[in-house]
Amino acid sequence: MAARGGRFFGAESAPPLQTTAADLAAEPAPPSFFNAPQFAALQRLGGLLQPPLKGRPGALDCGAPEFLDYLIGVSPADRQQLYKTGLDSLNSKSKKQYGKTFADLDAAQADAILKPLLVPIPWDEDLPKDPLQHFVAQAHRDFRTATLNSRVYAASAASSGRRGGRGTGMLWLPIDPVKG
Figure 1 (cartoon, rainbow, N blue to C red):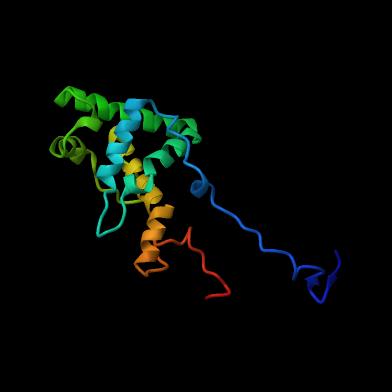
Figure 2 (cartoon, rainbow, N blue to C red):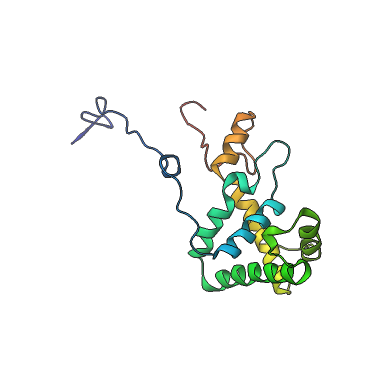
């Protein structure tokens, strides 16, 4: 088709293309990278590190553990090892202290395990040297990012009437140049 006056012939009569996001048309694949105890620990960790706050959804509401299962599964080997070793360490520490996996701990027990592992990080690239503290810091960062950039979180932000800023739908609710 040749252009005439900056337009293609027949462009006015072409119907608009209808699209649907993949996660709206089907359920995501079940977790596959982590084994069952690791994934259960990942879910529990996500629920503790990024809980629902002020009416906003938390990591579990947003499917962050499932997303991280996929993300870590396609990540470099060192990151995969960090997560697998970290989750296994949480489970072993929990079994040693309480006789059950991290996913099965009550809130007080989980707090007793996690509290010493949460340390201040002065610079983004200055993660703790201790492997388990390093894992918890990285997982915290990843859960926050996955939650704040999820479709569920964006919809929550949009329904509250807020736009723009961190974690308020920038990835899922782009500005329509026609509507403004």
